[in-house]
Amino acid sequence: MNENNTTDLIQTEQIIEKLDMNLEDYTQAFLAKLYSSEYGAYLAKTLFGIPVANIIAAFLALFFFLYLRKLFAHLVIQILHPFTKTTQTNYDERILLALKGPIAFSFVIVGINLFFALIFLETPLIKRLENTMITYDIFWVIYALTHALRGLIYSFTSKLNPELSYEMGNFILAIIRGVVISVGLGAILELWGINVAGLVAGLGIGGLAFALAAKDTAANLFGSIALLLDKSIRIGEWIRIDGVEGVVEDIGMRTTKIRSFQKSLITLPNQVIANSPIENFSRRGIRRIKMTIGVTYDTNSEQIQQILLDIKEMLKNHQGISQKSTTLVNFTDFGDSSLNILIYTFANTSNWKHYMDIKEDVNLKIMKIIEDNQSAFAFPSQSIYVESLPN
Image 1 (tube, rainbow, N blue to C red):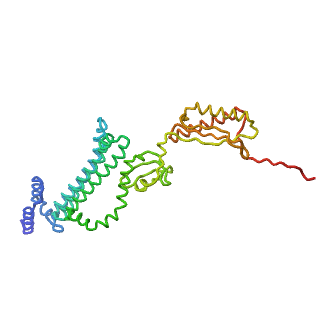
Image 2: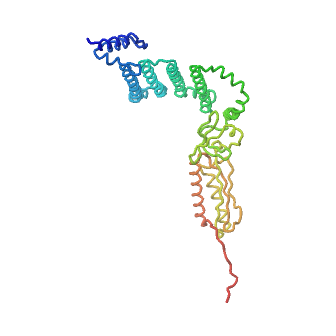
Image 3: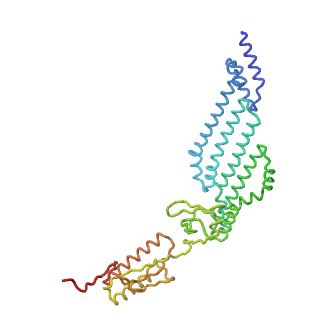
């Protein structure tokens, strides 16, 4: 054995003696055998003070756990997800999909942890980064579970108030998620040596400035509570507030989202809604039908009377017309080019499509009545009388 080989062997034995990476016994034994092999001298050579074998093993371990992450995602989608659909409850499916991201991220954490351990970079900074990732993943699991188990919250709120179970459930979920985020952020700050209790106490010193900055947020929060207690609007209702008209999509802690009929999303602060007149079209139950029709001036009085009687009878027997509401059919005035008849009644629905169907049917029946009475609809016209013509 030459002098160079003897030197390499001594370096290899020194590296083996210094191996203390907190790995499993079999992993340490495997590395020890690897350094003691015939290629140990080459693998023991250092790059930036780190043995080449450790660098190779670190990257292999990282890529291996990244592959496991993809393998887990494939396993969830292809095997476990279809299996959960065969069960009677859908909570297992929701929990599986909610935990898919956090569990996949845990493979990344293990891979990064093993990577730094193999290249001897277990410094306090690296430890803090790893603990931060672990803490983040734990609170990610809790946050995801609040979304997966939201049905339990809705079930609880439905027992308290069936009419506002969805809105109250969303409000409670928003509070729970806010608490989870706040506690998780506090835990991460504590890991980095930031005294959260001292930070909160420090906010007390600038409490006045904070209160002034947060007064709009507080006003919106109390506005959302007022909306829930007053039951003035609900998700899915057609409303008009301060010139904004559309369907309520969400009532949050700070804002309410309204989908306009042009399909644009409008966000209004809750304090504005709580302090503004609200026109709720979905709660009226009936919808007004008001029109003025004009018949030609060659229609005589008997025809007018019969037309009025026929229209009243038609509205009285129409299934889409509310019989408990006011119905008026009157010959009102002599127009410039027509004899005008006012028709004022209510459809017994608040649904826009049903209302349009009822109104269309009423219009067609009115046209038939006019035709049956040998009259016609008038259109704007003028009559010119010439007293004499020039010679």
